[in-house]
Length: 260
Image 1 (cartoon, one colour):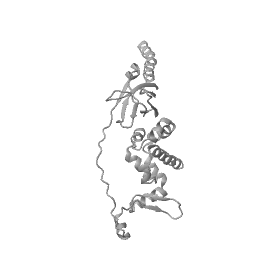
Image 2: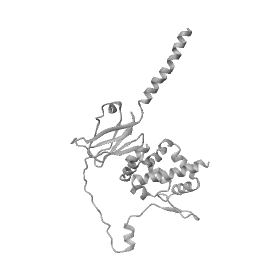
Image 3: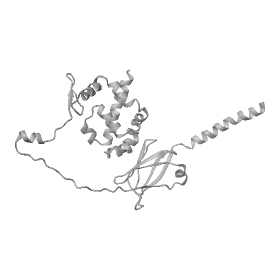
Image 4: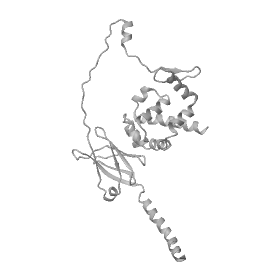
């Protein structure tokens, strides 16, 4: 019986080594592939490729080829103007055979007729003022502060929202970021990769940003709204500006949270 126990104990290190070998097979290494047009099978140049797990980015060359750090089961995100974005999971076979082709599909755009209705001005100020649209975004300010806050509409809840942002910033930001620590930790990694920054600077649709941060578009809007960014900024800023705004708000949260 004692001899059997000794044999079993001697096998434990071997079992651990096997598990280690399995873990090492998931190491990060250079992954190379080619991006082509699904319809023509021609290579696509300047396609943006982002590894959502490693937070690394690159672009394809004139032959459609790219190389990016990746591990098995990482997700690659492909983005190219006029083509449908695509996510691809990296597999062992992709590393083994080394001739992987990623096909992107062109988007079909249907142009619809746009009717422009001019304002019918009469020349009488009292009448024309009533016909012009009114901006319903109200600004609130508090005596002694040099900053005004945009709250969206004129209602008691809007005023409460502004006061909450000023008087209880730590509680407000904790609700925004406290439940998403993993996503927010990616902010610094994203900002340090020049290829990803270049990609975000050319984007206005928030799609790449939502994939990187694993947030919904409505979550991004809520964060910026509660950090007192104007509606015009939220609608017109590119994805890189949005990223920097979220990062600035998150840094404020960390400072306030540290003092609690």
